[in-house]
Length: 343
Ligand code: NAD
Ligand code: WQD
Image (cartoon, rainbow, N blue to C red):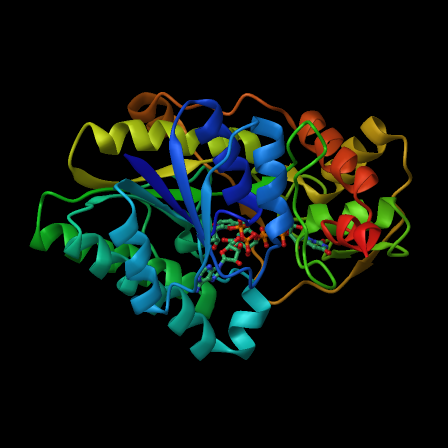
């Protein structure tokens, strides 16, 4: 019996594959490598000293995806595959709706056909839109302010309808806050294409000298120092949250949402300061205008995940900064470097 991991070559997926393999699960990865490299999977195998099957398949390709279900004995699915760049989703909404929503529908149709009804889904804190206050609990009202966020919201609704139609389904909706950090080996980490959209990969590229300085988007937010406050969570903690969710869905039925965050909010300036302290690198920055759609504060109340999944983040912001830097320092060109060396 295996766990199918869609998007397993990506940032969160690759870290989760490591935790799954280290805990003795058999895994099968499906990824179309639209935002990742096969090298990440090679390194997962190298770090765990375990081999596993991977398929270069697009979730939209139902015929080929069906072969994966036909050839393997799949017990549960962890579904990471999706496009995730907010700005890009505003520019190309149809691509986002098609990839994320149709991809999920195709996957669920096959799961239904092969009687695989256990699913862990990568949702996001983005489903809370602009929360009325913080910390955010799972029962807050849901809304979204961009196409990416709407795909997550719609998928959550689709999965609720699916469960309503057949209560044999067991589904965990994991609402991640801001995942950063990397595996402590420095072998796998986040490898964004082009100019990073998110704070931590941007900071690490400034630290390595690829970018001149960080642009801090706004200094007049209603926060302790005027810069945006977020709940940064270490990707390895997040990965472990998937194993806890998996244990729950394997042993029960139902559908439920869980916040995966630390419960602590840090501002952009807090992150810069801590990053500088733990890495001894200077991060020059400028203040620029607010980024459209950004909110002042967003952090989780993670009590429900703690009580019902037995999950709690264990790594602090220092760990996250140290591990992000180690990954960047050891892999200045991300996964491309190894490819260049071989050519
Ligand atoms: P990622 O881009 O690194 O990983 C996603 C993977 O899915 C990539 O390997 C990509 O190639 C693959 N993929 C995309 N569309 C596919 C398709 N149609 N068929 C097959 N494979 C496909 O992203 P990540 O940061 O690892 O995020 C994983 C999931 O978590 C995503 O669904 C994302 O929306 C969600 N999420 C991410 C964050 C974050 O900040 N990283 C926060 C909240 C939620
Ligand atoms: C964090 C803070 C920025 C970059 C995004 C998605 C969200 C979820 C997680 C997927 C904010 C500031 C950033 C920079 C900056 N992803 N910033 N300069 O926006 O909280 O969340 O990733 O589900 O849906 O929206 O994360 O890392 O982009 O920003 O000042 O160059 O850093 O304004 O306050 P965000 P982020």
